[in-house]
Image (cartoon, rainbow, N blue to C red; front, side, top):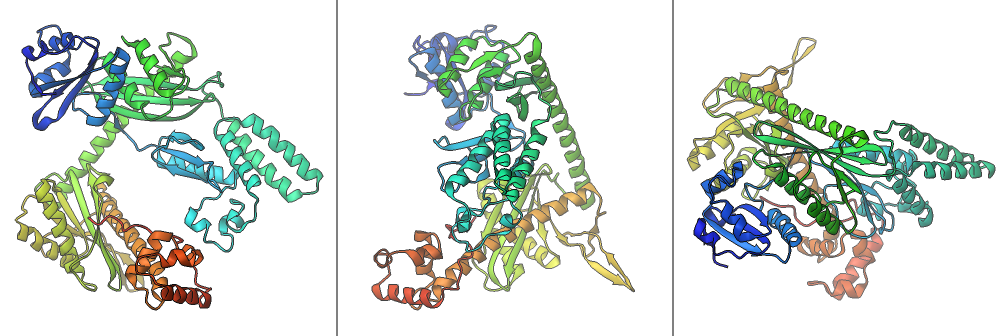
Length: 628
């Protein structure tokens, strides 16, 4: 369909049917998506002065250049289509959820031979995979996982480690795993532990305790005292959790409670997840404060429950004009009945007040953090005499082992907080051996070249090193004509001896053209921020270097076979996944590989026969990591 101009005349060309309309801005960007029972009447209302006084209408008139629309079969279809279009285009003036934190869930794949509980960011909607959460932070998720490991001794290792072990690890020794890796447990017994973990996480603790107590008594009667002691400890740990107070007396239902806090130019939304009468976790979001309550709730609920399970009831702070339609649409999406409730009194009203207080507290805390970050950045700018406010800081580091696998890393911080979407890693391409100055120059050149091309440059570049690395980076800035980025290097604090005493120097910051460093107080927020950025870049570089080194070590085992070079070794690992799998593959399958011959297969068999002590350290290979 041809795009219609953004004017009243175009509205008269739109049919009187249910559907969605899209306001288009410059470069064909979708600015706003709306739904309507009568498309013509709804779009026309944007051009009738005084009929639509919403703040979003002013923004639409300011930026919109054209109108598009999609006809739907019914109002319900139009609502589903609206959610789909918002998710696809992420329009500037629709409700867009900005998550205050990263939320994690626990995943247990019961289809696996030996299931394990692991932390994941995204949920897969597949049969046999159960999820618990979401949890408000990674640390909360890890604490739960650690606690579960102390009660239910399921494996925590990856598949590659599991299938390449020849003896139990330390987790077995401290009774946190039953060692399926070496066959010390039968699968039915292992799956019973996994089933107990699922029942515990779903809140079916009383049934679980009754069964465990029966098993403990049976083990004691059979004189299996060690087994009985293990069950006793598990029972005590579960009881400690069960005895925690509940937030609601109705422990049989699950609720999500949506609390709103409107202030200034934004709305803070807090969702409390109440499961089995217990406040399991919470989530915080913020949206721009130019939507009315109807659009706010419709947009939030449509996005929030598009890819996550909804409970039996969702408690809302206010009635929405299309409450029944919203309820039917969410129920249809979930495949079961979901009720939207606006309580006026009682226990649910108390829960709603709790959610609203949490929303207010989340807003206050974020603004205090923002104020503290701004103050720290202002101090950093003053202390380092920077030209620009360092809203985005990028720190670069190199890592190598005696000149092998030289890699670089970039850690990015935006307004004082890690911005991991901007983290980058680099394989050094143009430098042979260990030359930190040339390697740093290559990394900075590649980063700035991309930044100039995409108009995406940081405010401050920090080099992890001294004057040499700083000089190499500064030369690249002058070569590329970049004069709007501040540049410093951060030299690590070191210990110096004064007689019999060891004195630790302070962090020193070097600037181009200045011989003397700027010495920062170790306890100052500005110094702590720089050190944190530097440590992140160092950690990221070390992690990448270790991955490459481990991959090379595994590959080099196969390279010991005459006639198999690096390319064939990588191809074998990529196809079979591990050295062990290569060793156990059929001769015919190996011979069918490109570049392999019957003679090479025979040499490979002879190698494994004479080198049976060699172990596959990682158990699998990886596709080459992204090289920025």
